Image (cartoon, rainbow over all chains, first blue to last red; front, top):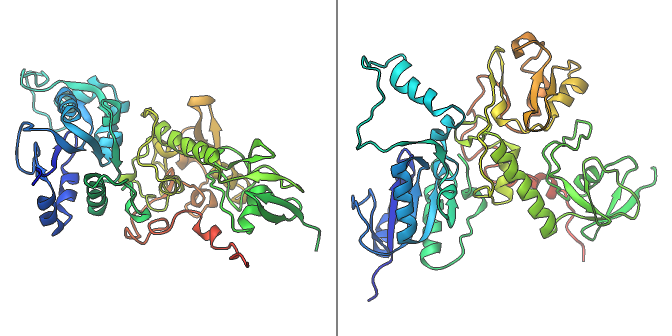
Length: 182
Length: 239
Protein backbone atom coordinates (compact mmCIF):
# COMPACT_ATOMS: atom_id res chain seq x y z
CA UNK A 1 0.00 0.00 0.00
CA UNK A 2 1.46 3.38 -0.95
CA UNK A 3 2.29 5.80 1.82
CA UNK A 4 -0.45 8.21 2.78
CA UNK A 5 0.04 11.77 1.52
CA UNK A 6 1.63 13.99 4.14
CA UNK A 7 0.14 17.28 5.30
CA UNK A 8 2.04 19.97 7.21
CA UNK A 9 0.53 23.00 8.95
CA UNK A 10 1.93 26.04 10.74
CA UNK A 11 0.77 29.19 12.46
CA UNK A 12 2.91 32.25 11.69
CA UNK A 13 1.57 35.68 12.74
CA UNK A 14 -1.88 34.25 13.45
CA UNK A 15 -4.04 33.48 16.46
CA UNK A 16 -4.46 29.71 15.96
CA UNK A 17 -8.10 30.37 15.10
CA UNK A 18 -7.57 28.78 11.68
CA UNK A 19 -6.15 25.66 13.34
CA UNK A 20 -9.25 25.62 15.55
CA UNK A 21 -11.28 25.73 12.35
CA UNK A 22 -9.34 22.71 11.02
CA UNK A 23 -10.41 20.84 14.15
CA UNK A 24 -13.95 22.13 13.59
CA UNK A 25 -14.42 19.57 10.79
CA UNK A 26 -15.85 17.46 13.67
CA UNK A 27 -16.03 13.69 13.12
CA UNK A 28 -14.47 14.09 9.67
CA UNK A 29 -11.20 14.33 11.58
CA UNK A 30 -11.36 10.52 11.73
CA UNK A 31 -11.60 10.40 7.93
CA UNK A 32 -8.75 12.90 7.74
CA UNK A 33 -6.34 10.74 9.73
CA UNK A 34 -7.30 7.80 7.47
CA UNK A 35 -6.54 9.97 4.43
CA UNK A 36 -3.33 11.71 5.45
CA UNK A 37 -0.30 11.59 7.68
CA UNK A 38 0.52 14.80 9.54
CA UNK A 39 4.10 16.01 9.20
CA UNK A 40 5.47 19.20 10.80
CA UNK A 41 2.45 20.68 12.53
CA UNK A 42 1.26 21.99 15.91
CA UNK A 43 -1.38 19.23 15.71
CA UNK A 44 1.19 16.46 16.29
CA UNK A 45 3.88 18.83 17.65
CA UNK A 46 6.49 17.70 15.10
CA UNK A 47 9.05 20.54 15.04
CA UNK A 48 10.89 19.62 11.83
CA UNK A 49 9.88 18.21 8.45
CA UNK A 50 10.37 14.44 8.15
CA UNK A 51 9.70 14.15 4.41
CA UNK A 52 8.08 15.53 1.31
CA UNK A 53 4.54 16.84 1.91
CA UNK A 54 1.64 16.92 -0.54
CA UNK A 55 -0.06 19.90 1.07
CA UNK A 56 1.08 22.64 3.42
CA UNK A 57 -1.49 24.77 5.22
CA UNK A 58 -0.18 28.14 6.38
CA UNK A 59 -2.00 30.24 8.94
CA UNK A 60 -0.88 33.81 9.62
CA UNK A 61 1.24 36.32 7.74
CA UNK A 62 4.92 37.19 8.20
CA UNK A 63 5.66 39.70 10.96
CA UNK A 64 9.18 38.58 11.87
CA UNK A 65 12.21 36.86 10.35
CA UNK A 66 11.30 33.49 11.88
CA UNK A 67 7.91 33.57 10.10
CA UNK A 68 9.75 34.12 6.81
CA UNK A 69 12.17 31.25 7.50
CA UNK A 70 9.34 28.83 8.38
CA UNK A 71 7.33 29.90 5.34
CA UNK A 72 10.32 29.38 3.03
CA UNK A 73 10.84 25.95 4.58
CA UNK A 74 7.18 25.10 3.91
CA UNK A 75 7.56 26.17 0.30
CA UNK A 76 10.61 23.94 -0.04
CA UNK A 77 8.93 20.84 1.44
CA UNK A 78 5.34 21.09 0.16
CA UNK A 79 4.03 20.35 -3.34
CA UNK A 80 1.01 22.58 -2.83
CA UNK A 81 1.06 25.50 -0.42
CA UNK A 82 -2.21 26.99 0.82
CA UNK A 83 -2.74 30.30 2.62
CA UNK A 84 -5.43 29.69 5.21
CA UNK A 85 -7.33 32.69 6.54
CA UNK A 86 -7.24 36.46 6.41
CA UNK A 87 -3.84 36.90 8.15
CA UNK A 88 -2.02 34.62 5.69
CA UNK A 89 -3.77 36.29 2.75
CA UNK A 90 -3.65 39.98 3.68
CA UNK A 91 -1.81 40.20 6.98
CA UNK A 92 -5.04 40.45 8.96
CA UNK A 93 -5.23 42.07 12.40
CA UNK A 94 -1.38 42.11 12.83
CA UNK A 95 -1.19 44.15 9.59
CA UNK A 96 -3.05 46.99 11.30
CA UNK A 97 0.41 48.16 12.35
CA UNK A 98 1.43 48.50 8.71
CA UNK A 99 0.62 52.20 8.47
CA UNK A 100 2.39 53.01 11.74
CA UNK A 101 6.22 53.33 11.66
CA UNK A 102 7.89 50.35 13.38
CA UNK A 103 9.67 52.56 15.93
CA UNK A 104 6.35 54.04 17.05
CA UNK A 105 4.93 50.52 17.47
CA UNK A 106 7.93 49.40 19.56
CA UNK A 107 7.86 52.61 21.63
CA UNK A 108 4.18 52.12 22.39
CA UNK A 109 4.62 48.43 23.24
CA UNK A 110 7.80 48.63 25.34
CA UNK A 111 8.29 52.24 26.50
CA UNK A 112 5.19 54.43 26.49
CA UNK A 113 2.19 52.13 26.79
CA UNK A 114 -0.03 52.86 29.83
CA UNK A 115 0.74 49.50 31.49
CA UNK A 116 4.46 49.24 30.59
CA UNK A 117 7.00 48.77 33.40
CA UNK A 118 10.43 49.07 31.80
CA UNK A 119 12.77 51.11 34.05
CA UNK A 120 15.87 50.49 31.87
CA UNK A 121 13.92 51.66 28.83
CA UNK A 122 15.28 49.05 26.42
CA UNK A 123 13.45 47.01 23.81
CA UNK A 124 13.59 43.23 24.37
CA UNK A 125 16.88 42.34 22.68
CA UNK A 126 17.70 38.74 23.55
CA UNK A 127 19.53 37.18 20.57
CA UNK A 128 17.02 34.31 20.64
CA UNK A 129 14.18 36.67 19.77
CA UNK A 130 13.42 36.87 16.03
CA UNK A 131 13.74 40.35 14.55
CA UNK A 132 10.48 42.10 13.80
CA UNK A 133 9.95 43.03 10.12
CA UNK A 134 9.27 46.60 9.00
CA UNK A 135 5.67 45.58 8.35
CA UNK A 136 3.49 42.47 8.20
CA UNK A 137 3.60 40.70 4.83
CA UNK A 138 0.93 38.47 3.30
CA UNK A 139 2.38 35.02 2.57
CA UNK A 140 2.00 35.38 -1.21
CA UNK A 141 4.24 38.47 -1.11
CA UNK A 142 7.04 36.29 0.37
CA UNK A 143 6.76 32.93 -1.45
CA UNK A 144 4.59 31.49 -4.22
CA UNK A 145 1.23 30.42 -2.78
CA UNK A 146 -0.93 28.02 -4.80
CA UNK A 147 -4.34 28.37 -3.15
CA UNK A 148 -6.05 30.75 -0.74
CA UNK A 149 -8.84 29.81 1.67
CA UNK A 150 -10.56 33.01 2.81
CA UNK A 151 -12.17 33.63 6.16
CA UNK A 152 -11.46 34.72 9.71
CA UNK A 153 -11.33 31.86 10.36
CA UNK A 154 -12.27 30.02 7.15
CA UNK A 155 -15.33 27.81 7.63
CA UNK A 156 -14.37 24.21 8.45
CA UNK A 157 -16.21 23.21 5.26
CA UNK A 158 -13.95 25.44 3.17
CA UNK A 159 -10.82 23.83 4.64
CA UNK A 160 -12.24 20.29 4.34
CA UNK A 161 -13.48 20.68 0.77
CA UNK A 162 -10.22 22.30 -0.37
CA UNK A 163 -8.10 19.62 1.26
CA UNK A 164 -10.18 16.75 -0.15
CA UNK A 165 -10.09 18.27 -3.65
CA UNK A 166 -6.30 18.81 -3.51
CA UNK A 167 -5.58 15.31 -2.17
CA UNK A 168 -7.74 13.79 -4.95
CA UNK A 169 -6.15 16.00 -7.63
CA UNK A 170 -9.48 17.65 -8.39
CA UNK A 171 -9.95 21.38 -9.02
CA UNK A 172 -10.84 23.43 -5.94
CA UNK A 173 -14.31 24.83 -6.63
CA UNK A 174 -15.99 25.95 -3.43
CA UNK A 175 -19.74 26.69 -3.37
CA UNK A 176 -20.83 30.34 -3.01
CA UNK A 177 -21.86 30.09 0.66
CA UNK A 178 -18.45 28.78 1.69
CA UNK A 179 -16.40 31.74 0.40
CA UNK A 180 -16.49 34.20 3.33
CA UNK A 181 -14.11 37.00 4.25
CA UNK A 182 -15.25 37.11 7.89
CA UNK B 1 -46.87 54.90 -24.29
CA UNK B 2 -43.85 56.56 -25.77
CA UNK B 3 -41.78 54.57 -28.19
CA UNK B 4 -39.04 52.27 -26.93
CA UNK B 5 -35.46 51.91 -28.09
CA UNK B 6 -34.36 48.41 -29.10
CA UNK B 7 -30.81 47.27 -28.58
CA UNK B 8 -29.05 44.07 -27.55
CA UNK B 9 -26.95 43.00 -24.55
CA UNK B 10 -24.93 39.85 -25.27
CA UNK B 11 -27.35 39.12 -28.09
CA UNK B 12 -30.49 39.45 -25.92
CA UNK B 13 -33.03 41.95 -27.28
CA UNK B 14 -33.72 44.79 -24.80
CA UNK B 15 -36.35 47.53 -24.93
CA UNK B 16 -35.33 50.77 -23.19
CA UNK B 17 -37.45 53.80 -22.44
CA UNK B 18 -36.04 57.04 -23.86
CA UNK B 19 -33.72 58.60 -21.28
CA UNK B 20 -32.76 55.32 -19.64
CA UNK B 21 -29.14 54.38 -19.27
CA UNK B 22 -27.86 50.98 -20.38
CA UNK B 23 -27.68 49.96 -16.72
CA UNK B 24 -31.29 50.94 -16.00
CA UNK B 25 -32.61 49.18 -19.09
CA UNK B 26 -30.59 46.07 -18.24
CA UNK B 27 -31.94 46.09 -14.65
CA UNK B 28 -35.51 46.24 -15.97
CA UNK B 29 -34.81 43.37 -18.34
CA UNK B 30 -33.33 41.23 -15.56
CA UNK B 31 -29.74 41.42 -16.78
CA UNK B 32 -27.29 42.21 -13.99
CA UNK B 33 -24.38 44.48 -14.77
CA UNK B 34 -22.10 44.67 -11.68
CA UNK B 35 -21.80 48.18 -10.18
CA UNK B 36 -20.61 49.96 -7.06
CA UNK B 37 -21.11 53.70 -7.47
CA UNK B 38 -24.45 53.43 -9.30
CA UNK B 39 -27.59 53.48 -7.14
CA UNK B 40 -31.19 53.53 -8.32
CA UNK B 41 -32.07 56.71 -6.38
CA UNK B 42 -28.97 58.70 -7.34
CA UNK B 43 -27.86 60.51 -10.47
CA UNK B 44 -25.30 58.51 -12.49
CA UNK B 45 -21.71 59.35 -11.63
CA UNK B 46 -19.36 56.91 -13.39
CA UNK B 47 -16.76 56.74 -10.62
CA UNK B 48 -16.01 53.06 -10.13
CA UNK B 49 -16.07 51.75 -13.74
CA UNK B 50 -17.12 48.30 -12.49
CA UNK B 51 -20.15 48.50 -14.81
CA UNK B 52 -17.95 48.95 -17.88
CA UNK B 53 -19.49 47.27 -20.92
CA UNK B 54 -18.55 47.43 -24.58
CA UNK B 55 -20.88 49.46 -26.76
CA UNK B 56 -20.35 48.77 -30.45
CA UNK B 57 -16.86 47.60 -29.50
CA UNK B 58 -15.90 50.59 -27.31
CA UNK B 59 -15.65 50.49 -23.48
CA UNK B 60 -18.32 52.63 -21.79
CA UNK B 61 -19.70 52.94 -18.26
CA UNK B 62 -23.18 51.38 -18.43
CA UNK B 63 -24.38 53.65 -15.59
CA UNK B 64 -23.76 56.89 -17.50
CA UNK B 65 -24.24 55.80 -21.12
CA UNK B 66 -27.77 56.46 -22.43
CA UNK B 67 -29.37 53.53 -24.21
CA UNK B 68 -29.74 54.12 -27.94
CA UNK B 69 -31.45 52.32 -30.77
CA UNK B 70 -29.45 49.54 -32.40
CA UNK B 71 -26.60 49.50 -29.86
CA UNK B 72 -24.69 46.24 -29.59
CA UNK B 73 -23.69 45.89 -25.94
CA UNK B 74 -21.30 43.25 -24.60
CA UNK B 75 -21.59 42.51 -20.88
CA UNK B 76 -20.60 38.98 -19.79
CA UNK B 77 -17.51 38.48 -21.92
CA UNK B 78 -14.32 36.97 -20.48
CA UNK B 79 -12.48 40.24 -21.19
CA UNK B 80 -15.00 42.43 -19.32
CA UNK B 81 -15.34 39.98 -16.43
CA UNK B 82 -11.56 40.02 -16.05
CA UNK B 83 -11.55 43.84 -16.18
CA UNK B 84 -14.18 44.03 -13.41
CA UNK B 85 -12.40 41.45 -11.32
CA UNK B 86 -9.20 43.49 -11.49
CA UNK B 87 -11.03 46.67 -10.50
CA UNK B 88 -12.50 44.93 -7.45
CA UNK B 89 -9.09 43.55 -6.49
CA UNK B 90 -7.57 47.03 -6.82
CA UNK B 91 -10.25 48.48 -4.54
CA UNK B 92 -9.34 45.86 -1.93
CA UNK B 93 -5.60 46.60 -1.98
CA UNK B 94 -5.85 50.39 -2.09
CA UNK B 95 -7.91 50.64 1.11
CA UNK B 96 -7.75 48.83 4.44
CA UNK B 97 -10.60 46.36 4.16
CA UNK B 98 -10.61 44.25 7.32
CA UNK B 99 -13.81 42.30 6.77
CA UNK B 100 -13.45 40.26 9.96
CA UNK B 101 -14.38 43.14 12.25
CA UNK B 102 -16.33 45.36 9.87
CA UNK B 103 -19.95 45.90 10.87
CA UNK B 104 -20.94 45.96 7.21
CA UNK B 105 -19.58 42.48 6.50
CA UNK B 106 -22.25 40.29 4.91
CA UNK B 107 -24.15 43.37 3.72
CA UNK B 108 -21.22 45.04 1.94
CA UNK B 109 -21.50 45.47 -1.82
CA UNK B 110 -17.73 45.46 -2.40
CA UNK B 111 -17.37 42.19 -0.47
CA UNK B 112 -20.43 40.76 -2.23
CA UNK B 113 -18.93 41.53 -5.63
CA UNK B 114 -15.70 39.80 -4.60
CA UNK B 115 -17.78 36.77 -3.57
CA UNK B 116 -19.68 36.84 -6.86
CA UNK B 117 -16.41 36.90 -8.78
CA UNK B 118 -14.95 34.17 -6.55
CA UNK B 119 -11.92 36.26 -5.56
CA UNK B 120 -9.83 34.40 -2.99
CA UNK B 121 -6.90 36.83 -2.96
CA UNK B 122 -6.02 40.01 -4.86
CA UNK B 123 -3.17 39.76 -7.35
CA UNK B 124 -1.85 43.23 -6.51
CA UNK B 125 0.33 44.22 -3.53
CA UNK B 126 -1.54 45.70 -0.56
CA UNK B 127 -0.87 49.42 -0.10
CA UNK B 128 -1.90 49.71 3.58
CA UNK B 129 -2.65 53.43 3.30
CA UNK B 130 -2.85 55.67 6.35
CA UNK B 131 -6.49 56.81 6.59
CA UNK B 132 -8.52 58.62 9.30
CA UNK B 133 -11.50 57.55 11.35
CA UNK B 134 -13.98 60.24 12.44
CA UNK B 135 -16.01 59.06 15.44
CA UNK B 136 -16.94 62.58 16.61
CA UNK B 137 -20.62 62.42 15.65
CA UNK B 138 -22.90 60.87 18.29
CA UNK B 139 -24.74 58.62 15.80
CA UNK B 140 -22.63 58.29 12.63
CA UNK B 141 -19.12 56.90 12.14
CA UNK B 142 -16.80 57.64 9.23
CA UNK B 143 -14.08 55.03 8.67
CA UNK B 144 -12.12 56.25 5.66
CA UNK B 145 -10.08 53.02 5.64
CA UNK B 146 -13.07 51.47 3.88
CA UNK B 147 -13.98 54.34 1.55
CA UNK B 148 -13.96 53.46 -2.16
CA UNK B 149 -14.68 57.04 -3.34
CA UNK B 150 -17.95 56.03 -5.02
CA UNK B 151 -19.55 59.41 -4.17
CA UNK B 152 -22.89 57.84 -3.25
CA UNK B 153 -22.94 59.81 0.03
CA UNK B 154 -21.88 62.99 -1.76
CA UNK B 155 -24.81 62.71 -4.19
CA UNK B 156 -27.34 61.49 -1.61
CA UNK B 157 -26.52 64.26 0.86
CA UNK B 158 -26.71 66.92 -1.85
CA UNK B 159 -29.72 65.67 -3.85
CA UNK B 160 -31.84 63.60 -1.43
CA UNK B 161 -31.05 64.96 2.05
CA UNK B 162 -30.51 68.51 0.72
CA UNK B 163 -27.68 68.97 3.21
CA UNK B 164 -24.43 68.80 1.22
CA UNK B 165 -22.54 67.26 4.11
CA UNK B 166 -20.00 65.32 2.04
CA UNK B 167 -17.52 66.18 -0.70
CA UNK B 168 -14.12 65.01 -1.86
CA UNK B 169 -10.84 66.83 -1.25
CA UNK B 170 -7.45 66.11 -2.83
CA UNK B 171 -6.58 64.45 -6.11
CA UNK B 172 -5.36 61.03 -7.20
CA UNK B 173 -4.10 58.79 -4.42
CA UNK B 174 -4.64 61.63 -1.90
CA UNK B 175 -8.31 62.04 -2.75
CA UNK B 176 -10.48 61.52 0.31
CA UNK B 177 -13.97 61.96 1.64
CA UNK B 178 -14.39 65.22 3.53
CA UNK B 179 -17.25 66.94 5.33
CA UNK B 180 -18.83 70.38 5.32
CA UNK B 181 -17.11 71.49 8.56
CA UNK B 182 -13.63 72.52 9.67
CA UNK B 183 -12.54 69.17 11.08
CA UNK B 184 -15.19 66.76 12.28
CA UNK B 185 -18.51 65.24 11.27
CA UNK B 186 -19.93 66.41 14.63
CA UNK B 187 -19.68 69.96 13.26
CA UNK B 188 -22.16 69.23 10.43
CA UNK B 189 -25.92 68.71 10.39
CA UNK B 190 -25.53 65.04 9.39
CA UNK B 191 -28.00 62.66 11.03
CA UNK B 192 -28.22 58.89 11.35
CA UNK B 193 -31.44 58.86 9.29
CA UNK B 194 -29.79 60.56 6.29
CA UNK B 195 -29.97 58.67 3.01
CA UNK B 196 -26.26 59.49 2.65
CA UNK B 197 -25.46 57.06 5.47
CA UNK B 198 -27.79 54.35 4.18
CA UNK B 199 -26.50 54.29 0.59
CA UNK B 200 -22.82 53.70 1.50
CA UNK B 201 -22.00 50.41 -0.27
CA UNK B 202 -19.18 49.60 2.17
CA UNK B 203 -18.58 50.16 5.89
CA UNK B 204 -17.26 53.72 5.56
CA UNK B 205 -20.41 55.48 6.78
CA UNK B 206 -22.11 53.55 9.56
CA UNK B 207 -24.91 54.18 12.00
CA UNK B 208 -23.48 53.69 15.45
CA UNK B 209 -24.81 51.00 17.80
CA UNK B 210 -26.31 48.95 14.94
CA UNK B 211 -23.44 46.53 14.36
CA UNK B 212 -23.68 42.74 14.04
CA UNK B 213 -27.49 42.84 14.52
CA UNK B 214 -28.08 40.15 11.88
CA UNK B 215 -26.52 36.76 12.59
CA UNK B 216 -24.08 35.24 10.09
CA UNK B 217 -26.06 33.19 7.59
CA UNK B 218 -28.97 35.65 7.45
CA UNK B 219 -27.21 38.72 6.11
CA UNK B 220 -27.97 40.14 2.68
CA UNK B 221 -25.29 38.34 0.68
CA UNK B 222 -24.69 35.24 2.83
CA UNK B 223 -26.69 32.83 0.66
CA UNK B 224 -27.34 34.54 -2.67
CA UNK B 225 -24.87 36.51 -4.79
CA UNK B 226 -25.32 40.23 -5.32
CA UNK B 227 -27.41 40.82 -8.44
CA UNK B 228 -29.60 37.73 -7.88
CA UNK B 229 -32.62 39.98 -7.25
CA UNK B 230 -32.14 41.63 -10.66
CA UNK B 231 -31.49 38.34 -12.44
CA UNK B 232 -34.64 36.79 -10.95
CA UNK B 233 -36.68 39.43 -12.84
CA UNK B 234 -35.57 37.98 -16.15
CA UNK B 235 -38.45 36.27 -17.88
CA UNK B 236 -37.82 32.58 -18.54
CA UNK B 237 -37.31 32.07 -22.28
CA UNK B 238 -40.38 30.73 -24.05
CA UNK B 239 -39.19 28.31 -26.68
